[in-house]
Length: 131
Image (tube, rainbow, N blue to C red; front, side, top):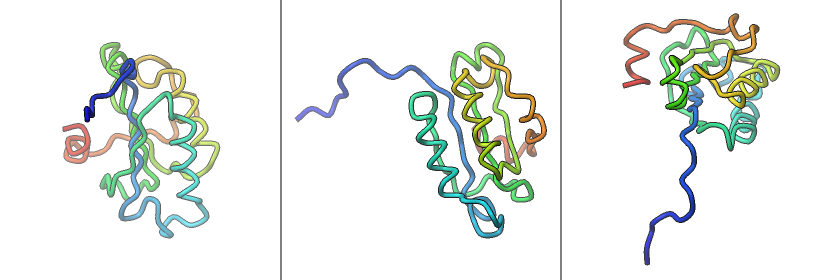
């Protein structure tokens, strides 16, 4: 029995990495429905991005952390991964969804409100995700 995929391959998409380790996604950030946030991202971005949960992005002081990595086309256009911290309310999650659906880094400008969430992680942390 063949295990080859049939049909047309999916277009390369953004990757949205959601921290769900040490502090993110835990009761250490109270009042947030962490499971609903991840479910929303997966459902709303099903056709626009790969959404993955990882154990820890080592930026615990900024829980909940989401990293939006550009698609190959976005990277070719100059897009780089964007780290967002303190993404702890449904409106912020919705802003991430809208931006990624519009193309994400390199292809679409993020909603201005996301500037408040953006941060630069340490080089060591960046290399762990991007490497």
